[in-house]
Every structure is written in C-alpha cells, then in structure tokens.
Amino acid sequence: MRDLLHRPRRLRRTPALRRLVRETAVTVDDLLYPMFVTEEAESSPIASMPGIFRYTVDDLCRAVEEVANLNIPAIMLFGIPNYKDDMGTEGYAEDGIIPKALRALKKQFGDTVLLTADVCLCEYTDHGHCGVIKNSDVDNDLTLQLLARSAVCYAEAGADIIAPSDMMDGRVGVLRSALDSAGHSRLPIMAYSAKYASGYYGPFRVAADSAPQFGDRRSYQMDPPNRREALREALLDIEEGADIVMVKPGLAYLDILRDFREQLDTPLAVYNVSGEYSMIKAAGANGWIDEERVVDETLIAFKRAGADIILTYHALDFARRLKIKCS
Image 1 (cartoon, rainbow, N blue to C red):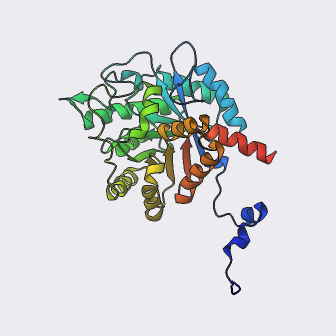
Image 2: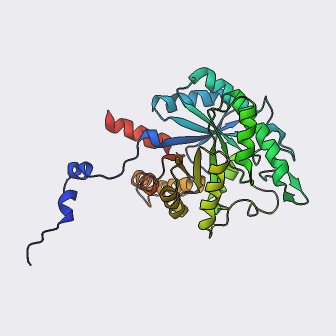
Image 3: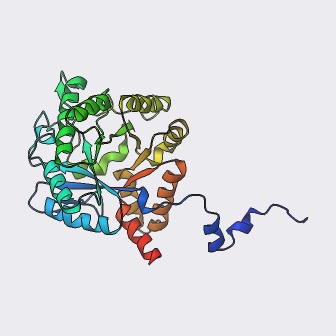
C-alpha cells in the first residue's frame, strides 16, 4: 500500500494530542442548574428524577452552597406550592414559594449565584395548564397580565434573570414593559423561544405536579415537526426585548439549536430536560451505558451545536467530576 500523506489518526494517538486539538469543551461556566423548591414541611427525593430533590427553602439554601462552591454560575427555580387554584394565584403572590426562596438565597449568596426565576402558571393552577382557562382554552391575553405580575413579583424578591416558559404570544414584550415600569429595566429576560410540545417532559411534570388535568399543551407549545417556525418565534422574542433565547428540549432538537446559532447573535440557551436526564440515569443504573461518558457526550453535543448556556440536571455531577480532574 502506498504511503498516505493525510493521516487524521496522527492527532488521535494519545490523550495529550487529543486534548491539544480538541475543538469544543464544556466548563462549569456553561451550566445552569434547575432546582425545585417546595412549601412542604420536609425535602423529598423525586422518584422520576434520581438524584434530584424537592427542597424546603432552608434545605435549598444548603444545597446552593455546593452550587456556589463548584462555581456553577446560575440556578433556575421551580416552585411547588401547597395551594393551587384556577388562576394560579400562588404564582404571583408576594409570599409565594418562589419569592420566599429568592429572598433567602439573595440574602445568603448575594451575587455569587445568579437566580433565574421560571415564569409560568402550570405549577400553580389546579388544572395544570400554563394560563387562565376560558371557554375550555388558555386565554392568551388574560394570562399575559398574570405572567407580568409574576415577573415583577420575582424581580422585587431578588431574581437576577426572568425566564418565561409559558409560550403565550407576546409575553416577552408584556414582561419587558412591566419590568421596566417597575424599575427593573436592567433585569434580563431569557425566553423559552422554541419550547416544543414534547413527550420528554414527563418526569418534570411528576416532580412539579404540573401535568394538565384535561387536554394537552399543543395549542400553545410548538409542534415538533416545525423547524422554520422556531426561528420566527425567536426573532419575535428578540424584537420584543428578549436578551437570551432558548431551545427546549435539547437532544431531539439539535437542528433547531444549530439554526439559531447560525441565524442569531443573541446568547443561546438549551434545556437538557427531565426526560433526557432520567433516561440516562435509568440506563446508567442498569449498567446499559457508561453514564459519565454519555453525560459528557450529551453536554458536548449542545455546546458543539452552538449553545452558550446549558440548563441541565446533570450540572452538579458534571461539576464535581471537573473539580476532581482539576485537583
């Protein structure tokens, strides 16, 4: 066989060579850790999401100490109230679970950890939908007014980033106006711009007790086969004042993530959602995969596709491993 001039394997021969030419790396600076806070008397593990917990406010503060020690820059908070009603009133109550948690965290950590507040009503409504029901459907414009109240409430309590996940039309503009009018013009909005009606959300809905009690969310979340529509949604959100746009879920929508990266200059987030997390945890627990390797490949895929921010329940485990490698 003739001599080969081009031998790409030359640069794969040793670990040091592979590190030297590696194109993409995920660091703790890329991570945003989603966390659940509850009004229940005690913290409890979430059966559908191994390793993830519903925390009381006090336990949440203790858990965030490790987040800070690992230098993970941000968390996302989801609230689980004791009381739900058809208007989701606990989602914008000044003494609600999220404002309580935000005030406690801000007092303890200051600006050390960024506090991101998810803005949606699904965890707070007794019917499980993301807005107010009128004539058996979610009323878009009435819901916007309540979401605006939530955003301002969370801003007043100490949120550093507001993240609307409801997928109502026009919500970014309404929230931006409400925040600015309340004196929070410096607070950024991270919009769930392409949030698909996905089967990957199942474990989260168990964790947050937020599954719809009738119908589904397909009339407001995006239809999975649609690709061009996602970019339109992102451009509308940016026009309305979004500072960061997001793709959710992640793994089945890497093409959407790449489209955003190629078309937009705005910082880009991706949500490695509960179903993606739980599938890896279950397969790892059964010995079917090397969990650490698959987590690493998954996070690299998001970064390689263009994400600047990766929301993932793997954040703590990944950051712990990085710290060990660097020590």
